[in-house]
Length: 328
Image (cartoon, rainbow, N blue to C red; front, side, top):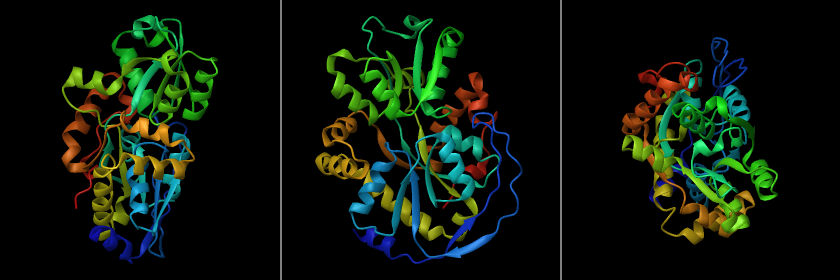
């Protein structure tokens, strides 16, 4: 509680940096060089931009614990995320790691933590589908183009020589959820908590084909880093105390997610207009752990180096430099 109060009482100047970028596609960015930034002082309120998934859970608990100067906004597509980052609409932004690595090559972004280590699954309503090999000539619907669901399914398909034998189509998690529940599609790659909603609707008519976290662990003997939080490097340099207080409060909240699952489910369900049983079910399918960027670096680089072998465009063709990792 002391950390929460400290964070709430921080009154520092917040800077907005206008960064001009022109992007055709995240996986293969065609960005203009970042122009010199204009610095504008504003009041000390903080915006956290996040998808309606695992990274949001600790932030929602932070607000529940009394941090009232933190505004939480959400993004649904990677395109929306990129547009917000270009406009510097948030001080703290939850972002897929591969997208962060790509964008950091043209924007002054730094990763401050990794918080999501497992939320993605491939499911099917066809009981005969036991592996990717059973999906030749089939269509798989995938959420978050250029994000972890897309990157991971493409990685496994490429690894097994099946990428040109399967059709991938993209939609948002709510869209995919409705399509599979209505029987209009059979195969999907979805993150939690959306998938828990589908599981509760279809029950024993939905079959889990791939748990990407378990697959990664079996292959590489380490956890699968998927998403973290980035900041504008210049803003972070000017406001180190704000960054540190946010990191500590976020980590404290992340550690309490599973302590009182009913409370977590209530807070998240209320914020995102979801059913509490769906959120509570999702908690058992997520790995949420806030790890400082430097501490998580070995796992991140293993993930990035693996992608470089088969999908170099997924992280912008090269590893991010040392400046990518925030140093307190």
